[in-house]
Image 1 (cartoon, rainbow, N blue to C red):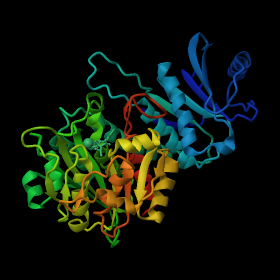
Image 2 (image 1 turned 45 degrees about the vertical axis):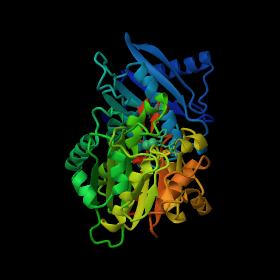
Image 3 (image 1 turned 180 degrees about the vertical axis):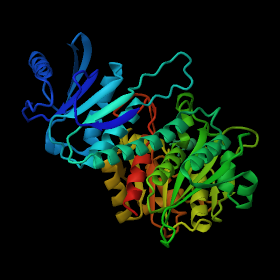
Image 4 (image 1 turned 60 degrees about the vertical axis):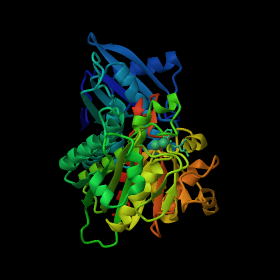
Length: 492
Ligand code: BES
Ligand code: MN
Ligand code: ZN
């Protein structure tokens, strides 16, 4: 898709999108021809259309015998127009344009948008590309329609900031699509080994360094918790380590991004009931978010130092699989009694976290994981649940999420609930009972972060969706990439 800034409207436009604020007057400014303005006025009158929040209508008119699509979209009240809100309206415009099979689109704001030009360019490109995304690899006779050209009609003093924004929006979208493609790939294709290969491809494309450790190497590191989870599968687990050093002179600044990388989660012997297993190819969405983020920060050349760690495995059933009642010694030396083999994510994450601190010397840890159904029960599918031991860092994440539009909500890191994970035979057990499942899962990981600043993101509800909504879905959303990239930008 080509995206550019245009200062002029040609006489014939196949598709025109006009966004306007609710309260303002839709004035004649000389940008549109009188004939075009007349048809829009006529349509608004006949249809009693109002430019209210996200209202969208389209009509067709003839220009010298050729069909022209006109899409009108309401931006609501101008002073309530935040970046995520605008992305939502913009996504509706795009869905409508795609529905109309638009190929050459002119997009115009017929009011003064209260956002920086950089953001205006960014939002247009990011939203256009992400809304057009469709995972169609395995559809034999499917022809996906995607617009070829998008022109942002805008009158800036210079196009510099708009163009820079478009470039950034494209980087954010491309990185999010890397994550979506990985998550959408089924588990029969995307094994831990294949995930490692994909990470290598991204590393090559984006100039990152990468190491992949096989099971022998992982065994030598004594990551028994991680290994146990992958033992039931004939697909060998892999430890993937990607590094980006954007600020080599800055000491004590290494951020570790740890992504849950279960390429499939059957639940193991504590097996999942039928339906809840169907989408478990998405249980590596945290890993995908981390890989996408590495791509984005490298493309943006951020002056930060980041290591990504993915303990990739497949949770299956076999005579070699781990069992309820097994006692495992994690890399940290803490022992864990297994009370449920379906609480496997935390077992892989704690070894990855310990590795990040001890071997990579990370100064702070962020983990991102499709970890608990309880997170979905508590917050539904619109919010990622977050726990953190560091208010300042959490605030940065929250500020980033208010730009990206990927909503987060903080859960209490209530340490008395650590009691729920005490057990007789080992240092702790891997579940905390029926209540507060999202919090106890986070607390389990918290017990392995030592004194490091830490953020935990539970994306079980936000990573995968069956219905399209805004720029998302159906399928993988690529959640996390845009928020983490935006946050890392504020940590330069
Ligand atoms: N991968 C699942 C969590 C999940 C659930 C992700 C729904 C996406 C959608 C995780 O490994 C899991 O099975 N968690 C258990 C934990 C329980 C056994 C303590 C859960 O949430 O039921
Ligand atoms: Mn599970
Ligand atoms: Zn899982």
